Length: 121
Image (tube, rainbow, N blue to C red; front, side, top):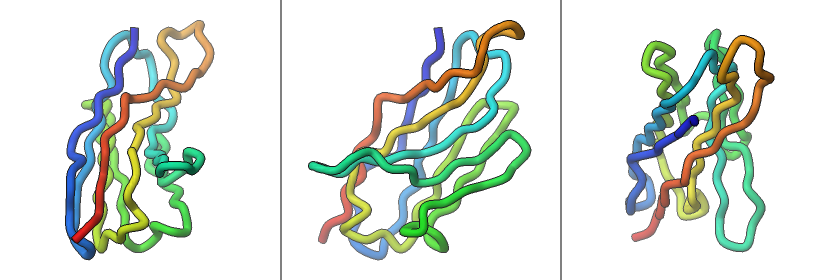
């Protein structure tokens, strides 16, 4: 059993900052990629940022220069530092992990329960 637990969401004014955290726990053999996705009301879930085990990162164009993803491999934890937040960043943010639960298993996607980020004055 694998769990991804997010924390750090909340209400922030435009221009403000928030830091999200996501810790993976359970039967984990190796995590290939961790990332963040978001889903705004009435919209599809979209990629925000991902980070590979070696540190390579990928960002959506809409957050480049404002968001920074980082990872602590020893703690199976991924972070998302969000600066210069805009109202259009309002969404439920989901943590994702692409991982194996054993040497013999295949890579599979696991998701957190989501954390609400609201940017409003």
